[in-house]
Length: 100
Image (cartoon, rainbow, N blue to C red; front, side):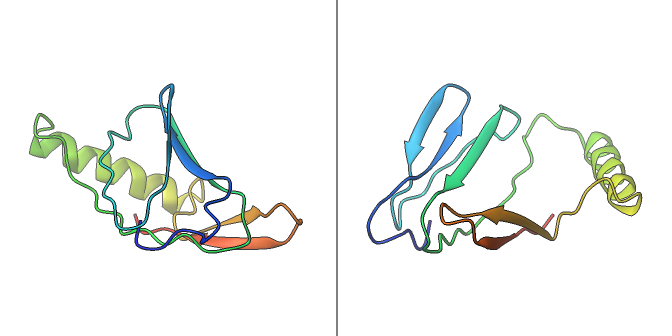
């Protein structure tokens, strides 16, 4: 993360059974094919630089098929990869923006 809440409150990531607390300016590499979740139960922003890297064993044809599958789902309205609304502890809505 580039920025994490200053009070270090309830903010983190879980990948499989392992939980991590976000630390500013510390890289975290994960395989998102595992079940994972992130949370920020504070009123402050968390800013990440997210880079997607293909697994080296995924062939070019498989990559194209995966990309087409997600594009089809987005066109059907099954995915909204642009923005997700979350509620903070005090009930306020905040937006999290994603690039797919």
